[in-house]
Picture (cartoon, rainbow, N blue to C red):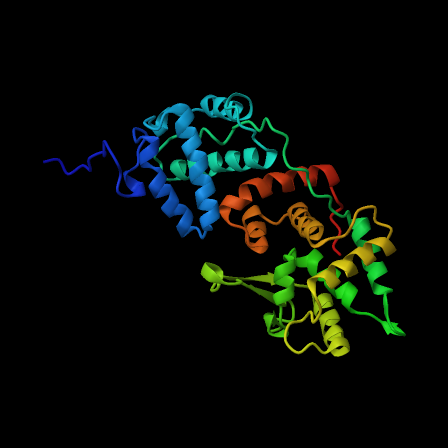
Length: 313
C-alpha cells in the first residue's frame, strides 16, 4: 500500500482533509467548528451558516469548493440583491459578503484552494455609513473644552480623563464602565498599561493590555481623589458619561455629537496613521479576525478621507 495519504472523496473528518474537490455541503460542519473555536457567538454561527446555505441553494450544494471563482460569487451576490425575490437589506448584504470572505479565506489558509475567490469580491450594495471621526485639531479643541469644565467652584477632572481615555484606548462603553483602579498597571512608569477584561461566558478569561499615557494616569489620580469611587472607576451611569461627551462636543463647537463609537473609530484611525500595524490595532480594539475584515476596510477609508496630522494628543 502507498504511504501517501489518500485524498478523501466524500465527507472530510478534519479541516486538513478538505481539498479542492470537496463539495461545499461537506465543509459547513467543519466551518462551524472553526467559528466556535474562534469564539463566535451562536447567533453569528447561525447567520454565517444560513449565508452558506443560500450559496449552496444558488450554486448547488454538491459544487466542489475549487470551482468557485470571484465571478461566480459576484453573480451570487447580484442574485441576492436582484434575482432572489426577497428583500436584501444593506446590513444583510454586508454580512453575507463578510461570510464569503471569512469562509474562503479559511479554505485558502488550509491550502484546500490555491486562490481565494472572495478576496476581490465586489461590494455592489452601498456600505454602511462611515462613522465621523475627530481630526487632530478637533481633538485638541475638545481636550481644551473638557479641561475648562467645572465641578462647583473647582475644575472637574472627569471630562478630560474620560475623553483622553477613549482617544488613547478606543475601548467600548461597556468596557469603560467595568474598569477598576486595579486595572491600571503602573509597574513601568514609562509605559503604564490598562487591562481590559472579558465580560462573561467564553470571553471571561480573555484580557488585553493597552498602553496609556502618564498624562492620563495623572488625570486619573486626580479624578479618584475628587470622586472617590468605591469599586469601578466611573461611579455613574453610562448615560451620564454620554451626556459628558455631548457637553464637551458642544463646548468645543464640534459639528458632530461626540460618542463612544466616534472616539473608538478616531483612536483606530489615529493609530493606523501613526504607523501601528493592523494586527496590533485589531488586538487593541479586541476584535476577532472575522470582525476585522470590515473594520480594516473602514479604517483605510476614514484615513484617506480625514488624513489627520501625525501629531500626538
